[in-house]
Length: 389
Length: 137
Ligand SMILES: [Zn+2]
Image (tube, rainbow over all chains, first blue to last red; front, side):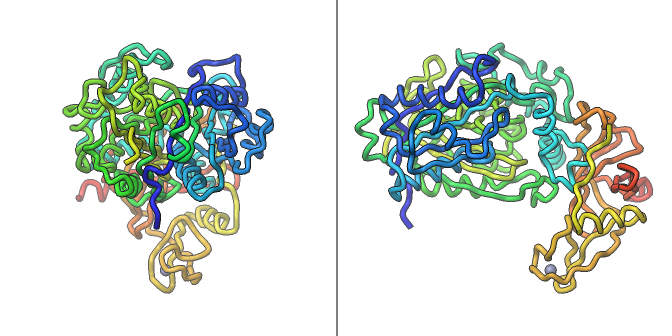
């Protein structure tokens, strides 16, 4: 089997304004992110022959990617929309990379945007919340989205002695990163006490353990390593990618405190020929603080059960041993729903180009990105690097 | 405003019919002997289609829980406790823990099934702390 290692590279990356952006629809944000990414890459639309998007909740379309292609007046030969977000973002990149290597397309744009903050009607917001969970055996009990993740947090606490302070530390670290990012939605530094004193949403999760609700979009441009040399930006190479898919519904999870992030991570490390200790930073899916703690363990940055000690002692803030979510993450940068992990991707491109400004990680060579979706169900891990190998 | 009702289907309807007569029904595989929940058209373990409905003991253990402080809709009275219960027969299901102060709930505590009305025609299993087993263990 041939490996994707070093065969494709990201040659363009851009975010729209994020946070509260009432003057743009979800469709317009998606299109705008593409225009910005093309400009960053220094190419015109005629060079694009592949387009991947994810559907929007505020402006859903049956054929979303085709609708965006039509808006741009392009006719790609490779075109599809992912139905969901979270973990699917890097799965999409996995597919697009394979499409490039097998000759289905040469220059693929991946663009995702939504306006959950300004663009959802009350009914849409309600439907979004209540459509998570099994329609026969879970939804009637009225679990909210934070409640699902609270079940994971509570199980981790019972099994390993993890405390609410450990989860709070993750929110504090993400905010400290966001404070260095002029684009972030929430930049005011917070303390562990601020998190613990914020309103309880679903025990043990407080308001500040929960990610933001935002508008925004981001896009990247992917091409072969060979083609990448002709672009004006230094290429950022895909060195490893892996996926792991467990249950869909939390009541069917094999284990509440460990996830298919283990398999997903192992596959990505194996392809890249790298280990957790080689990573200069990590962008870990943080819809709620407990996901970061479980991901740190499952991706091998610390032993199972030691996530709490890792965030407190080794540290994941700007001065920590492993800076996590250097843009501020879904907790403090922005979270427009499905597109959430795209901002981890664009941020990683800038970190590896060494253009991340005040928040640049010194001499960053390798970064790991992890996304999950469902309720710790669908996992994808991506390892990016400055060099081809 | 009504609470969210389970969507229907032949298997779900058989399950709900059990709830109506005070039975928590699981499927038991005639070939491998395992119990499963939620109900499926085959045994998820061995793929046998020889499944029998059996009434569970209704006893289980809390493997996780949360107190929902901000309800999903006005039909739900917050705070309410959403929990994952591992039944003695093996399968895990989501449910509510009722009739106790949320502070008295902990992972590992034994629970016992009860049935609560969800609409005129639908009842669903909920759980109460099993104080008898709780104090003896
Ligand atoms: Zn069987």
